[in-house]
Image (cartoon, rainbow, N blue to C red; front, side, top):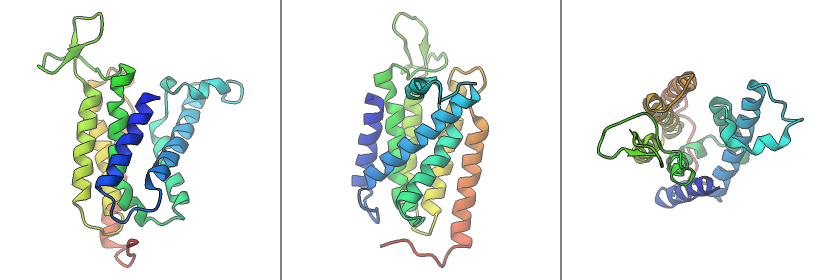
Length: 218
């Protein structure tokens, strides 16, 4: 709960810092879209694990049991567009704040005690309680990368889909670069991160080359 609240606070800060051209109730729209994405991603993860959500409804709330990253992202984007009456340009206005919200979710690892990854001897590495092995604070690395990404996106032009596409690509890139420092048996959903990078860059390119006749809302 505290991790989710941290994400909301970061997203709200993002809307205060980069408020230009945002739709009304921007934070509420992001929270609603994130909740829809989380629900869909959790349901897909349960199905892939062989669990029936209809017979195990209580397990839907156990987010730590796994959330399917790709479908959660797709559902969140679709939900946001639906709530924004399919005005694609609002994605550009919301992109920096959305990256801030993701950074807040990663920062929430401090409340969940889940910041640490693989072993490290760097000066800022620390050990879990009861352990002498120091580890990378990988979730904080991701949070810092996403905050920097939000700033980069905020400096881009308002050409349709440019900010949204680059934001999606940067989110995938940050997760891809930090994934090797996360303990994982499967290696993580690297394919989805690569897809986010490719699709985000393609969307930004399409916006610059093919959709120049669509003006963002003012």
